[in-house]
Length: 229
Image 1 (spheres, rainbow, N blue to C red):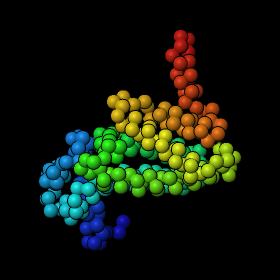
Image 2: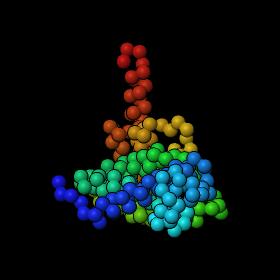
Image 3: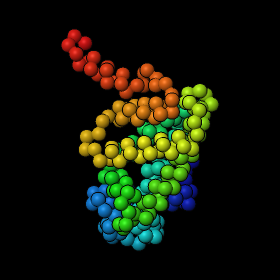
Image 4: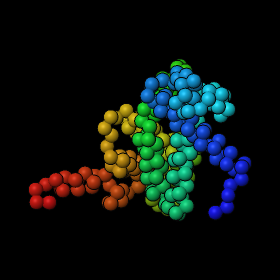
């Protein structure tokens, strides 16, 4: 295996430190339920000097946006893997919903804070959070529009305006995010994904695949729990 150059090693270390600072900051923001966490504390918990934090982030708002960006980059990576397999719109819809809920499950406390700041506004960090979520929302709208357009072309969905459909799907998913982030005992991921996708498919006029129907999941559970099953 070829050895990395000193420049490559410095880049690896730089990326590692940046990610470390982001992860610590996200955890502290979530634990406090507030963006008002001192940069000194973030640096100390990340095991770096305060000046090192400012090498990567000029202020706390920039760090807040980076927390959301990193979560979204993971979702994008997941979706690229699904697309690379040549998956159809139905599977990509499931991947979008699953990816978003997985990000919620990774750090529900931070996502509760982010969603709360976007809804209420006016508090420190709200403007940065709102700007980044708006950017992510626009990008996701494009993903959903493409997904809907392909589904219509293939006859999986009824004829509809892709932009309007993407907006409605986004509203449904955002609501599901808020509910899941605030639920101390959320339903299993597969069940939640199935329920949301079933609801979206019904709205798009798409037939629900038998093997993916959340209703069938529930009936199967009931059958397994019956005597003699």
